[in-house]
Length: 44
Image 1 (cartoon, rainbow, N blue to C red):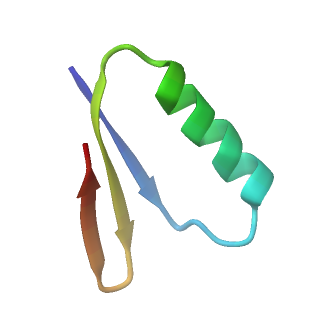
Image 2: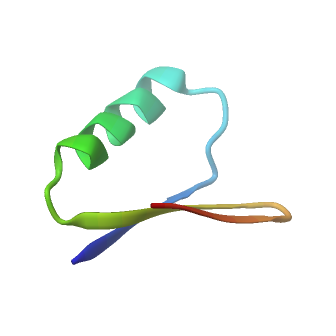
């Protein structure tokens, strides 16, 4: 069981798409979290 943590995401959409694609292809990531200024959000 793994968790994905995304943080400090700015204007690099191709890199974000690549990371999200890797997360989607992974079979053991159970939740994705975004940590940004004033935001704490979990996406199952």
